[in-house]
Length: 264
Image 1 (cartoon, one colour):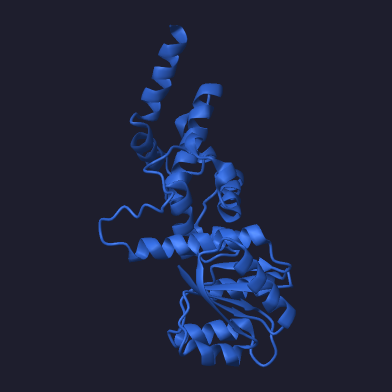
Image 2: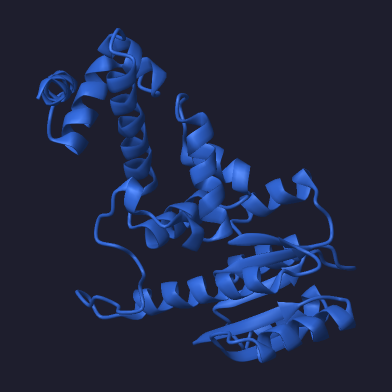
């Protein structure tokens, strides 16, 4: 179960958040409220929550400053920011503070419930004995791209997959993804693996190899050097190594196998 602190200087917002959490099937065992950053820091000395959700703009002390001080003092490790401002500057600052997510007001209940559930699962897995399977995890053993049920993935993971689909021909890093979805790279990596069963890099390679196979079949005149460049590999040698690792055959062997099948 999840111990949670809510911080907002607007009483009606605090009340609304409490109603959402209390009436929904959330994994929260204890919830403590604070109306500003100073009150929050005082209560954090006694109540060490698993997660702190705070408004970003408050008088006297901003949500970002609260996060900074709470982290420095070791009072909390996980943070979610609430904001009524869809401002890239705030979002970039939130990334630097390594927040889990940046939620816009009014709060989307489903989005909040999904976040709380994911964090709760993460905590359960961390606390599980070594070697335990952690039966609450939804991670698949090693799925292929075609086996992924995208409709069942969270909003953030869908955005990551859409970004890869659009930019796989270029050099892609977790830092670029972080800038796109406004989440910290470490959280992205853990979230993506938990929901898909694949690491970010594993998925990217599988996606590129899938596209390469399509090109080999549909555009037979293309050289392997051209194909490797078109799917995002600067080195054709690297492309060959990755292709064989994930396909069990070299690009040449794969193309020949396809030709033989077409003759049958």
